Image 1 (spheres, rainbow, N blue to C red):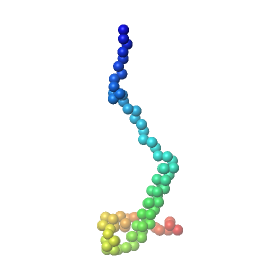
Image 2 (cartoon, helix red, strand yellow; image 1 turned 180 degrees about the vertical axis):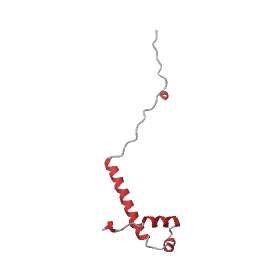
Image 3 (tube, rainbow, N blue to C red; image 1 turned 90 degrees about the horizontal axis):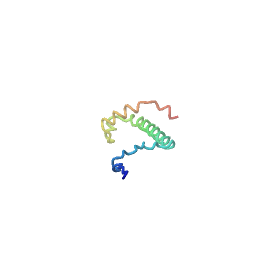
Image 4 (cartoon, rainbow, N blue to C red; image 1 turned 180 degrees about the horizontal axis):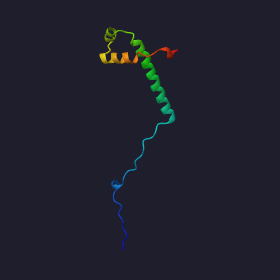
Length: 82
């Protein structure tokens, strides 16, 4: 008398779903710091570019949509720099 049980193939087994590894606290801190500094730099540069006329910005190679973005971003106060 044989007691043979078949489990099927390995392909029939459902894979264990692993969650993607969460970045470390240090990595998340660095990412947030870099994003903040990049946004600050964009505001700084845009405020200076906003002083140029549209014709000057076109001559520098900016497109009309980029000039519109510069005008929207560059209208903030610069007092927070000091």
